[in-house]
Amino acid sequence: MRLSRTLAVLTGLALALGFSGACGGGSGGGSGGSGPAQTGVVGKAQQSRKLVIGVKADQPGLGLQTGSRYEGFDIEIAKIVAKDLGVDESGIEWKTTTTPNREAFIQQGTVDLVVATYTINDERKKKVSFAGPYYVAGQDLLVKTDNADITGPEALDGKKVCSVTGSTPAKRIQTEHPKAHLQLFDAYSKCVEALGQGSVDAVTTDDIILAGYAAQPQFAGKFKVVGKPFSTEPYGIGLKKGDKSSCEKINAILTAAASDGRYKAAWDATLGRSGKPAPTLDTSKLTSCE
Ligand code: GLU
Image (cartoon, rainbow, N blue to C red; front, side, top):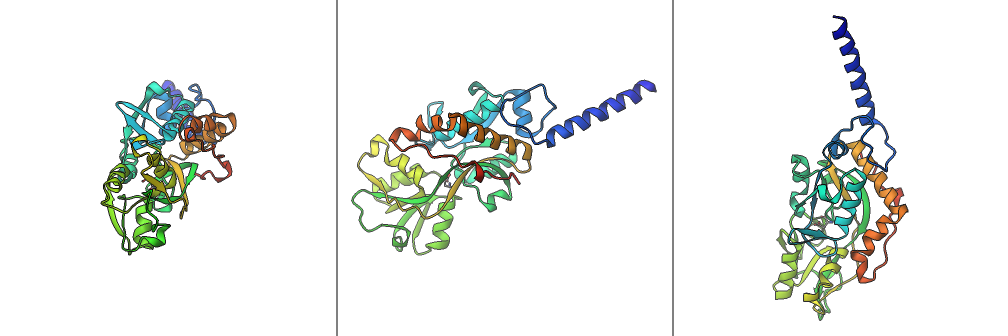
């Protein structure tokens, strides 16, 4: 009798401690391992030292797969986050995601995190939570170098413009430029191929993605980015909706990386190789993880 009562008290205490740990603010930084049990992505990382991270596979400079290797700015950001959650590169399983499957992959638990040029917006926030933004892009247009008539989105009427299903740029063309003939694929690389073959007049998505294609050696001199961004695309790190403590922890990691030089190093090793200087990560704009 007495033993079971003691056990009950101890169990209650453990639950209380665990509960307060999961809801506590957390101070960011190291992965710990000795503190109270964590839940969500932070808990998984702590317990298994493994994470499955969804990334793009065909976006040069951001997320590009060559054989089993993934590289790019998103990959470097993902590695920083994983490391501070206690997961080494060897514990990361990279999973290719496409624009339309990111919410489902998070909701179904196919991936723990998504770092994949993933714009934070209210519609997506109904299904997933976002840490970040760690970068702010803008929608732009990619055209053939000799194209002189497509100077901005207002010049797209009657033109064939290619984008990806489920993307924010595709939606913006549908709603704000309905006279453009929108062609949809599941990956931007297919749009770029179509532009090369002349079957579309322009490709639209985030400027930083388009710049990555234009800089590819096989396209040298063929394409240009129009260079007049017409939206704001804040890139977030997607995770399961409601995993607030993990989201806050990731924002704390981004804040630390912005001040200790790791954010700049991630840029310089990837997108920065084109000469574009590293942006400053505005930590005052980080999400409230709601
Ligand atoms: N950032 C935009 C989005 O999340 C376009 C890039 C992409 O499709 O990943 O929809």
